[in-house]
Amino acid sequence: MKRNILIILAMVMAFPMIGQDKGKNDIRLSNKEMANVLYVMGQIHPDGFTLDLNTMRQPTEGLMVSYKETQNSFSSKSIQKVLKHARAHESYVGGWRDPETGLYYFDSNRPFAEDSLAAALAFARENEQMIVYSNKFGISVKSNYEQKDIRIIYDCDMGSSTDDLFALMMLYRYMDMKRCTLLGVVVDRMNRANADAVDVMNNYYGYPDIPIGLEQFGVKSPRVFIPYHNMAYARNIEGQPLFKRTVGDDGEYMDGYKLYRKLLATQPDKSVTVVSVGFVTCLSRLLQSGPDEFSPLSGVELVQRKVKEIYLMGGVFGDSFEHDYNFTAAIDYSLKFFELLPKDIDLCFSPGEVGDPLYYSAKQIIEDLSWTDVHPIKWIYQFLVEDKFQKMWDPLAVINAVEGDEAIHQVSQRGWVSLTPTGETIFTPDPKGNARYQLPGDAEWSDKLLKYIRLMTIQH
Image (tube, rainbow, N blue to C red; front, side):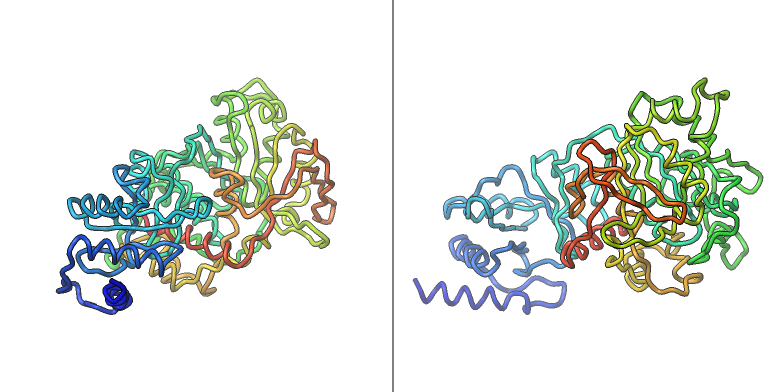
């Protein structure tokens, strides 16, 4: 018996190297032999594995979800049940160790294409499974999330750094998974080309009717880090537009603060989450606004009544006293925002240092978008971007807003945040305060989060 186990172990160790072509291997094992293989796989892969019973290899692509029928299978007798189910279905078996009980579980798995995350998550929820596993990125995506009514207004400085585009992309993906509703997009960087870029994104991702507001009196000529604002006007070799737009060249965009007022007026009290990843010019003008055709309330009253929380990309905390770019670029507006914002609205800041380790290279981006020849973000990286990487600052605010604090490495204690006239953010701890800020994670956490953003990018 010991000799048989050693032979099987040698076979298992060789499986990843066998049959590199797409055909099946010639290995034929009985159910008893296969059960021993799975047991050995569990021994040499304590962190988990997935095995294709047809090829006897571990897949490197695709998403895996376990069937409900084979859950709680951890005994030798259960392995036979898992094998029977797997062979009657897609012939994938997975294993994982529960760190709390020390038990090693085996499951029959259903594979999904790597670009079918929404379908995989829906299947996982139907089968009462906690996760979807990505073979390509080696990460698990939580599926047993509480489906909350999260209503978001996304406020960005589109047209400079491409992380605004990826944050917006993630909001579309969250809507695909029915995890949030994007009420509207406010562009706080002046120039209609920046709003046109959002129009392209809305259309490309299947949400052409999401309203867009544009700042009319904000920061004059702010710094442009990556000049991609002409993406909306890209054309093919025949001179035809590459990307659809709803507003078009002759349409008009509502002033940013006006769109805020229009959207907020129609929402239930304390129901709106604002994700602000650029300047706070439109928010400041909103707070300074008076009654209009959308609401009899002042801006402060409207925000206090309708807004529940604001997630902001910005702030410098800890021992460092440095200027924050987003707040300093429009310092007068920023000071007014901090002065007028009602103190009962929760704030969570995402400092730049949290996103600094999340480098998304041009090579990775183009690879992850290889499923199509025509894509607005891919086009930017093929023809406009000289800087060959992008730090994923802005998606952190979106992830935090939709998935909660558990998706973030750690957040600070509560306190109050004030802004100095020179742009420093000062945090004063107080358990009754309305503000918190994200803390940077280690290399492993940063790597997993970047892989998660990449997984969302390849969906289509």
